[in-house]
Image (tube, rainbow, N blue to C red; front, side, top):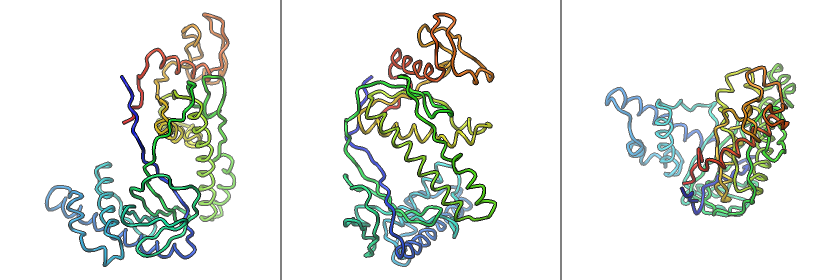
Amino acid sequence: MQTNYIAGMILTYRYRIKDATSGKHLDVLSRSVNRVWNYCGEIHEASRRHNKRWPSAFEMIKLTTGSSAMLGLHSDTVQAVCKQFVSSRDLHRRRPRWRGKKSMGWVPFAAARAIKVDGDAVIHLKRRYRFWNSRPIDGTLHAGSFSQDARKRWYLNLQVEVADSPSCGTGEIAIDLGLKTLGALSDGRKIENLRHYRKYERALAKAQRARNKGRAKAIHAKVVNARRHHLHEQSTRLVRENNLIVVGDVNARKMTQTRMAKSVLDASWSGFRSMLRYKAMRHGARYVEANERGSSVTCSACGARGGPKGIAGLRVRAWVCDGCGVQHDRDTNAALNLLLGVERHPLVAEIPVL
């Protein structure tokens, strides 16, 4: 089976809006977007009661035609809201929630028609919105949005089609995800788990006890940004060094239902795998999610299953194989088994690149 790589991929570039004055205008647009969204919800309920079916995106767009001028929105924005409403409804099989005053602001648009990027500013509906131009836009704009975070700060999100950059390394690596360390690599190295939430946990608890919502939101944002920065650094380094990246398919969702939920969420395994996946796709590397069942109890040297087992065995971080006498680090051995399993059975559980 031959893996084919696409000629380009869509990335989302995110820029902070200088919203000292622009934020007020974006607030007005977001309230108009909420009116369109809630109107779609009313149409959905009426159609469900009287016609016994859900209206399509085409019908929603047809019913909202001509409303953009009255609402002060671009016509593409109204259409994008209708399409997103139907997409969210079909995905979750229920009507999406109403958008009100407490909803974070959101103004979608079609980049080719609704905006024009001019240096460190974007022009939308004849108004300039300046932003911190932290990185060049090196691709073709397709769509985008203005979005607001929990601290009421506005951001510009641009979906950009960029060309693939086949610049991955020549090595092969496997990663055993964990909590004590973020990941153990098959070459013996470890990726440190910085435990960003634990670092700010006391400060967050203090702000919450004082009912200081602004401070609590700022701490949450700091934790998220620090964690994302660390994951980007590590995932980029691994892709630059290797052309084969194997990761265990540990089920993070199930782990969040245990006593280790806080630590699992703080490690952000799913976010790390997602970064590895799309960066590998862009740079021409293979990304594989391998079945990790039995990887920690199997000797990577002789294949004997003599490692520590069960809940009590989780405390054992190093063990000696009874079959060949090789001493193993539990996590490094598991990573080696993931890599050996893919080499023996190539393309098993591989994430296809369309």
